[in-house]
Amino acid sequence: MIDLLRTAAGPWTPTRFGGGPGRGVTVGFWIATGIVTSVLVSGGIADLLRRGGTVAGMLELGYPEYFIPILGVCKILGASAILAPGFRRLKEWAYAGAFYNFAGAFASHVASGSSTAHLLWTAAFALCVLISWSLRPTSRRLGRPRPVSSRHT
Image 1 (cartoon, helix red, strand yellow):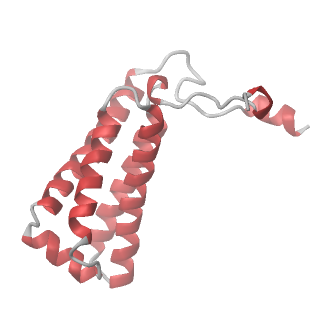
Image 2 (tube, rainbow, N blue to C red; image 1 turned 135 degrees about the horizontal axis):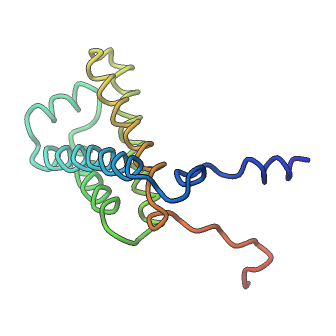
Image 3 (cartoon, rainbow, N blue to C red; image 1 turned 135 degrees about the vertical axis):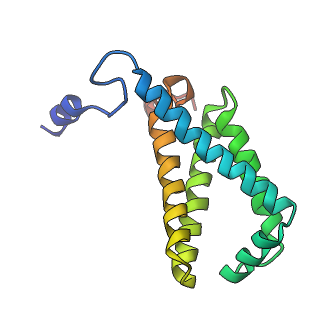
């Protein structure tokens, strides 16, 4: 019975209920991806340049100063992986890292009692990561893993 329900429901994909991907899905993907990658790159550059406001904000949240350039490098590499063609598995890791970055920022702002604006922006960026990830074209998705029995050992 459960297999029957799984087959009937199937995985959700943007193309499941209407043939090929519509223009809206493509536009939505690129808008969300553009927001995510531009925020990651600009934030990464600010981290690497040790911009005053960035350093002060990170210190206010309780992070050590040596953590800032590490985070900056990771943000730029993650944005590059999301935008580059191919490298599907790397993209999955980059999306996960971007989500953890924004979700962690949200949690840090909650814990430190930051303003509502900080909470809204970090939550919105985390949501953009999820939108970009869920709307990405098939060419940017991992394939189905092979069953364990068909793998060579």
